Structure formats: structure tokens, C-alpha cells
Image 1 (cartoon, rainbow, N blue to C red):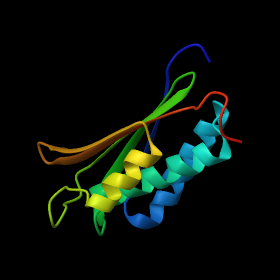
Image 2: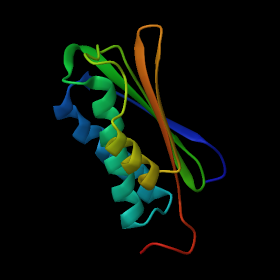
Image 3: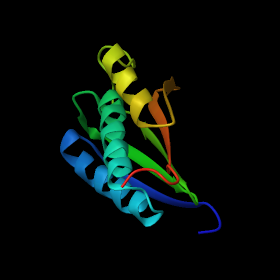
Image 4: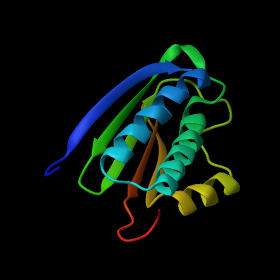
Length: 128
């Protein structure tokens, strides 16, 4: 794969639809050669950030995920208008988990939307 390709997924902002988000991330990351451990790390990180932006969920809101696939990395940007009851923050444990699982991550609010971004790069010569 010589250049960047994007896949956009839009699902209801409900936890029961996050499986679709994880399956999409798994498929794209295995396509570029991630190890099983790297795929699992990515799925866990995606769960943490999706739950952070959708909270308890909102059947009237959507979660839009943009997966940017490059030669040895996958970046996922998530955005939703689902309201977050206690503000958009990660607890300390979630932050530590994300730092251990992915290369970059961020979480922010912007004009009524809740957003996140994560990047996972393939470990060359490591993994399974």
C-alpha cells in the first residue's frame, strides 16, 4: 500500500454498535500486517475512547469513525454529538491504558461535538 486510504463508518452512538467499530479496526489493521497483539491493543484502545465520547449512549446521535490506513499505521478519528454527562475526560487508569496500547491518543470537545483520535503504528520485527 503506497498511500493513505480512508474508510468512514457511521453507527448509532450506542455501545451495542461498538462491535462493528472494533471489527472494522481489526480488519484494516490485519490488512497492513499488524500482529495479533497489536490488533488486540488497537481494539481495546478504540473501546476506551469510544466509551469516553458516547457515555451511556444516545439513540438520536451518531458516532462517525474515520479510519486512515497507511503503510504501517492506522489512525482512527471519532466524532459524535452524543452528550457526555460528566464532561469529556479520561480517568487516570484509562489514560494509562491508552498510553500503553497506542502510539498517540487525544480527546477533545469542539463546538458541540466530542472527538477522539488514536494512532497505532506497526512494530517492525516484534510481535507474533
